[in-house]
Image (cartoon, rainbow, N blue to C red; front, top):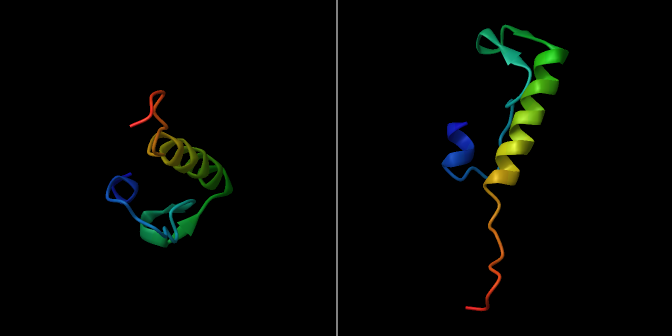
Length: 52
């Protein structure tokens, strides 16, 4: 997910597309959304336990 690693603010057409947009799949959409949610959670800033 290079777009998320690059700090994208808006990701359009990021789920469900195959073959460069020639076809779409509900199953792939579900898997892609799950992956995007995991990446977004992974890249969230964490709160530190000690005040800085």
